[in-house]
Length: 466
Image 1 (cartoon, rainbow, N blue to C red):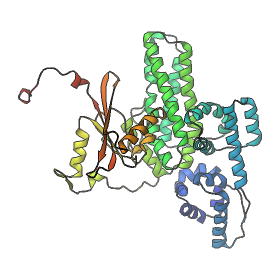
Image 2: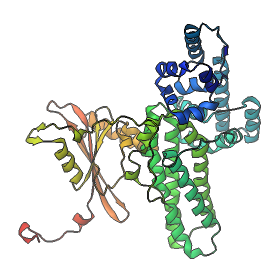
Image 3: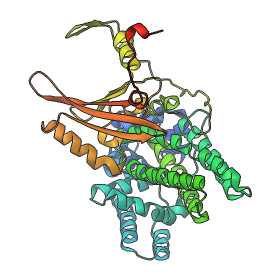
Image 4: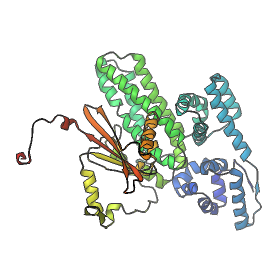
């Protein structure tokens, strides 16, 4: 038997079933092989070269270990054909194409070079390449500019990829269903004959923000935990561009000053994002995440909300993860400075405060947020454990880091901001928390809708309550 970068994983597992358990012990990324959906879809077409890339392993090392396991278990003679050089060359070519795009080399020349030199490319490779560009120092804003161009270059290859059939309720199924709704609304706008209906359609289209929020708060954190951070940062910046354009177009539509070219630009941006999602992000995520991780993505979806969907069908993987007791399910008492409370009481107090709070620990990790009834800014379980720097769009990252540095250095104790949003006046405060010895322990964010408070006049005493 011979192993190479092009050996199909499905063929290997069919002839040597014990390799599945071996791979899962070899690298935690391969635990996705426990998922029948993954084995029967992505697993059927994945090669050892692609598996090594997903696992972040050296291809030759992985093949040598597989060969040794087969020899040990069966006595079969297994040879290994070196594949790392080919894989590295392929990645190098991809990087060079993107860099030449950055230099302004003619797109048609690059498309021909790509088709001549690269016969097939996985969405995961594109995601890895994008991340390497950022790691090498190319600004995220520059990578964002290249995004449309590199999708165009890779389009013919990407379109050969098909997403596996997904059950209703799976997070990717829901995201794709929303994309179909978005396409329907955009088609209505493009076919519109009565301009009086335009404001309503633009407002309806703006609900796509929930679609992007779920990606940012649910999907991106899980991908970051798997070491795939570059694509999410670039996409978040593109989300913000769409939101800004949506707001500008919506304002001009209300004033009657919008131009056709502005509406066309907005629609083009959204359609381009749909293409990037369905041809790069979703296939790459399906290759990378296990069922248990998709359950984490799904948890909290309803807290953020859906775009145009009142609800979605429930979804459970074939093997549901074991339930871990939540803090409020553990019956213990917390001895506080001025009393004792149970976790349930603490949870009730925090979720009934007239303000939203979030807490970031000394390692810049989001470890808590209060799920109040009417949260001002959406939060979901996906952000727990995520670095706070990754919870903000790229354009505000510098301010966030500057604030945290000032808190850690003891230069500032607090900071406050206020904004007007949807007719409401929002007061946002940040507090540096320190222990009795003055050691920095984290940052508390408190957001409050103070519209009603600002409008108060005169007095209303306790005895006046009715």
